[in-house]
Image 1 (cartoon, rainbow, N blue to C red):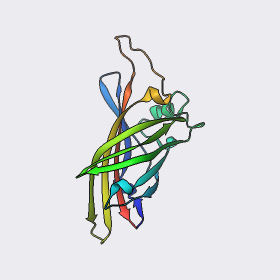
Image 2 (cartoon, helix red, strand yellow; image 1 turned 60 degrees about the vertical axis):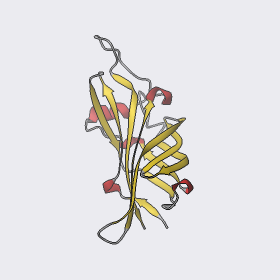
Image 3 (cartoon, rainbow, N blue to C red; image 1 turned 30 degrees about the vertical axis):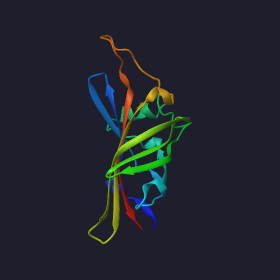
Length: 172
């Protein structure tokens, strides 16, 4: 049984505090997925995700250009962001995926937690599974250290970044 990403119903995004008062959200284009998926027993599953770092989109071209620069993702030298699972577990509708996240050439272990739904039949007779996952990372752990001090105190960009993943898989 093979599964692929339904790109129109999936999203890999992030949220980070700006100036310590508001949250800026962004997303990446649909990632490439290598998946070994056992819908009956997720512990026998594994996933490798590759994201094109150049596809970052925060709905603000100047900010996107800055994120692609050496100050952040340095996409010329590090064109991909990757995640490779080391374990997958499920308890009811809750799932935990532990794996190695690589950003800007630095790899750290992360723990994604969230919900799993499915299988579900779509209107065309196909099978689908969906995952809603998130985790918080410290961007500085991945070499994303650029920042600017604010006159009133604090910094322009928070260290903590929330990763948010909505993933819908379709059999076929």
